[in-house]
Amino acid sequence: MLNIFLSGGPVMYPLLICSIIVVAVIIERIMFWVRLGSQRNQKLVDEVMDLSRSGSWEEIRRKTKGSQDYIVKILISGILHREFSMAKAMEAAAAEEIRRMQRYMNVIDTMITVAPLLGIFGTVIGIIMSFEMLGVSGIEQPETVTVGIAQALITTASGLGIAILSVFPFNYFNSRVESAGLAVEKYATSLEIVYEKLVSNENGEGAV
Image (cartoon, rainbow, N blue to C red):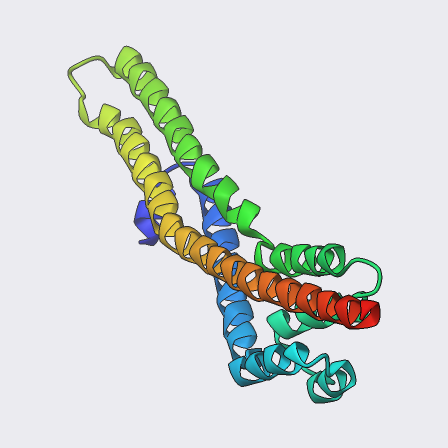
């Protein structure tokens, strides 16, 4: 592997940096989603929704104290600001949680684009070297040309390899973000409907 790396020429070093960055981000994101999954408490989310139907806001605050479930935190944000704008409060809290989930995703996206371009750049350099060597040694010594061709092929393969291996985790993490966003939308909308119904009932009773 070391010989292949060295044969790839100087462009292999930025490609190595790209691969290290991608691996580091993937590991960090895996740890993030594992931690986020361990904080999920679907039972508590269901309890919050049940208690909200009866307007037991203080009971909800007591039960959810210290919870790190992102859906619970978004719902609590709406509940705390229900007299002002529940929807706006939950929207702001959801945006913050989604931002955390999308952290470093632009880095992987950039590497998916940059790595193949670096590979092509290495290919161009390798071809230029091949023609230069061909001009110096002539066709009588074709083995000198193979050095540049090898460099061209190695950098191209390396760049494509980094990009291909980055696409799978990138799409997976994006699907997790999308699923989380749908879950947030589902429960936030349900809470809004429940609260609007409670307010409507209270106004109706007051009118009577």
